[in-house]
Image (cartoon, rainbow, N blue to C red):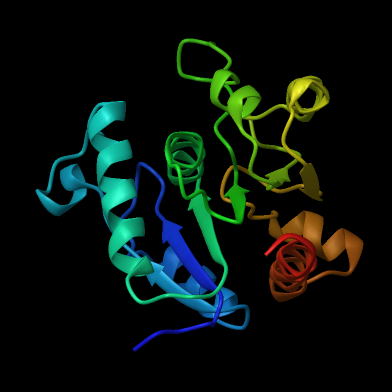
Length: 200
């Protein structure tokens, strides 16, 4: 059956599958914004710990997007946690029928060897929202800002003050600021909603 509801294909990060508690909690929040579809990369399905090489990840992500898009007539969005967001960017660059928007939750800008993974971001034309924690060592905000200034694609940054790579804020930090984890999560969902209202 054709669906005009917004489609959100939600990709996991490298360390945990779509069934993880983090992914499932985020999925529930995203369901207020559209039809959320999750998937796992081949190495996860096979029980391996090391991620597949980029071409395999990109092909799997593209195939999942094609499956989820069957019969879909509405807007299409790629959302990803860490590696899932980065691979989503590669898919957006590769596809002829591009997604309407991208959301990267904790983009892994800096690789394990210190290399800056900015090439795909500079190729992007699809609007992208970065949701980043200030304590995320894989994406120092000053380095991301330098890349954002060079990007062609419309891009927005939502900062999670005190957030780590999984956007989690420490309990002491929350208490000091009179916040709850639920409030931080709600602010992220609101930022995504505002971005999608404009672009998808």
